[in-house]
Image 1 (cartoon, rainbow, N blue to C red):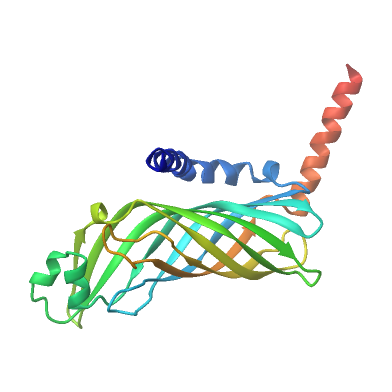
Image 2: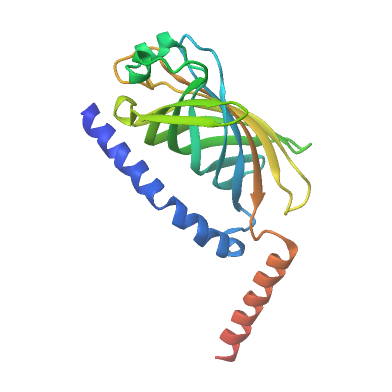
Amino acid sequence: MNRVLRHIFLLLILFTTLTAQSQVLISLILGDKLNSEKLEFGVEGGGNFSHITNMDSKKYMSDWNLGFYFVFQLKGPWYINTGVLVKAKTGSGNLTHDDLKTIGSAFADTAMGQGDYYQKVNTFIVPMMMRYMFQNRFYVEGGIQASLRYNAWVEYKYTDEDKTVLLKEYNKDKINPIDVGPTAGLGYRFPGRTGMTVGFKYYYGLVNVYKGISGTKNSVFYLKANIPIGAGEKAQLKREKKAKERAAKKAAQ
């Protein structure tokens, strides 16, 4: 039964993420139609700092992410925050020789000399969080986050004054395709309907990153900025004008 549920969950995330990029383009065009008094839509972007636990290296890897978000107002100060990060990369930095041996990397058997090794995992990320907005415009939120791995590799990089060496060993078959875990954060929303939101959140995965290697969990810090699309005064006036035109057309009939 658990295996069946896992497959169903995988299909749901896959369906969501495969259409995510096209949805971003469509949503950017139709942003003014998606925003309303109870719904805010926009683009989310920022940086993340990730680390895989139970590794010899404790170095966090930094990268950037991009996607879109929805914020639904429930009642009063309570909101639901969700969306999809369609460009997001997690992993771990400065892997040691013992780390390379543990994860079964062919780099462990080579003498590359100077340079750094990284585990990088490309994922689609779907958060589902409950948010509480204080009167001073600060908020706290918490919930769960699910991610789907679509590519992964161990990367060796060495740079000197004359050249840069970059080698990749793809190892997505050694990475569990799904990760789920709790996430929580806080942030601030700037005044005005067109005001963007800035925030911080932390995520801890409950699924081992590597198949058969216990204790290898995702630990990720996110810095984010949410920018509403089509939520300004011009968009509001445009919606009001169209509503009046529809009402006048209906009355004329």
